[in-house]
Image (cartoon, rainbow, N blue to C red):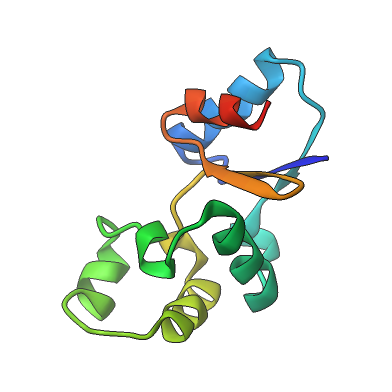
Length: 113
């Protein structure tokens, strides 16, 4: 099963969702801003993305600029920050079994098929 970590208010996330729909993929939607994301879930996603936590931070977000920009955190601290502030996580993230991709641009999702 494919899971898309989705924010319906985000243009890039909507493009990722449309890509999955247009390609007839069966998927489930996780609105992680409403439902939350656990530390274990985020760590699993980062492993499947083969990314460090800071690689998946939306550095243009106002909260990032005010609270976190220019500060040094460990990977564990970044994960905690991301769990507590999920809007800082880049989106959409699409997960299929043992691999995940950041769907920006949406065509990157095609690497899962």
